[in-house]
Length: 385
Ligand code: ATP
Ligand code: MG
Image (cartoon, rainbow, N blue to C red; front, top):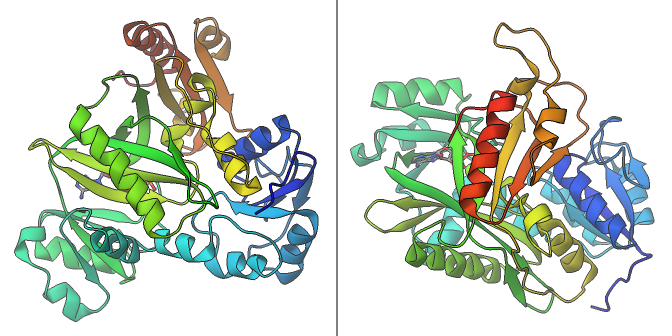
């Protein structure tokens, strides 16, 4: 592919915060941007040169996006794969619909990992009542997850017994599900990889993630933040997963580290990931610039982390006092802290659990970073870590 140079227009399906940060990266490099999102107030739609306000399967909207754009990417995996396939008839689309379709479906995703010989949690796919009855006892206690459309721990129920499993499946509308054995996690981590049209790959350093209530809360990235052998295996597995589907674009793979030294793959996201946001402030090439480069067919260079980093997610909860009254977080106090980098996504309504922004803290050492991050957490009312 001949590179699309700055001056071209890059399109993105979806207008949330990931698209907004893609748009910012593209515009900084001199590209024009087009966003398709049905919401008039979408975070990316509001900052893009073009905003096509249409549903993801709207023919006229898709034609308009393709008309504006020389190449098109996606910001979330629940964009219907047929919409991407439809766009691919007119313009280069990365990642491809087929790769996104795998990531949209936990059962297909696990089959892909298994095919490559990469261990995932013991699990069973549940489509029929017969599948439910046939579940092995070893899978309990477990987590029942809808095969499609889950995010931030939504569409998941923890179950201890067969009775709870049956109730949970009813609760999830008897949709296709995956039951995963509950694993004793020593840590969670993720790897962001970028793969070009020519198969070249670069990646960000392995990220150590802490989730609260199924939602990412804290990511730390510094030399030695994870056991080196498991970190190296995570990078190797991520490369194999991307290459195994001929992936083009930015891909993030999430892993579980277990106490016995083993590593288990959890899931993948066919796009930049919340756990890679630190790269905007602490690496010389961010995950969003990598997305621009892969889409435009530009060379990929290995990003260099220039500072230890800690990212705190800013959820809508912070906009409410303990008694429930609305408030504005004390941004001035946070910005008084050296090394604190504030990112807010321009979302209008704060709701508990809604991702409103993130704060990256950088510093000379990880100890300095943690001290500052704890101060910021205290100012904002985020639990310590
Ligand atoms: P997101 O898309 O926001 O990453 P999700 O809704 O797709 O999240 P998962 O990544 O499947 O959800 O799970 C969310 C969190 O729940 C995990 O990061 C982990 O903390 C916990 N979890 C999930 N599966 C298991 C498991 N099999 N054993 C132990 N903990 C688990
Ligand atoms: Mg996850």
